[in-house]
Image (cartoon, rainbow, N blue to C red; front, side):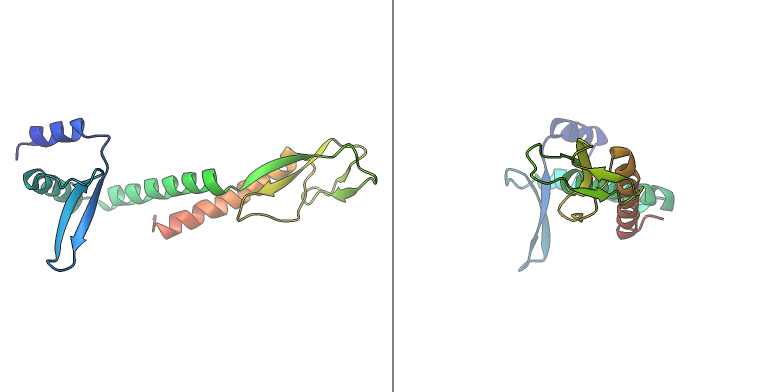
Length: 160
């Protein structure tokens, strides 16, 4: 099939998602759009040929770049949904007793009668009882956690 036909098909169908279906009884793989319609076999075959051409002779560098981009996407989605994030919490004004703690990072004493707020790490996978005196103190901790998370993502995607 002419490359211009493929190019035009892709251009006209950018907003459509595709999925593959494997038929157990026949062992065939078919391509469907997000509305459940099977793709015209001629178009599907042409797409498969172009994909084969694109990926068959890919250099190790290009393959690693794809892995890296996928790891970055996973990292971005994960941190957007699950954190870790820094959360500032104001001291309540109606406390019957003063309370205080020492910042887990710098050791500064933070007190409900002298300070307006305190910081903690939030996120479903990052809850802890550690408290921090300021954004300046919590940011390096968040940065370390995110660096470890990114390294883990790179490892899971086998980025070299």
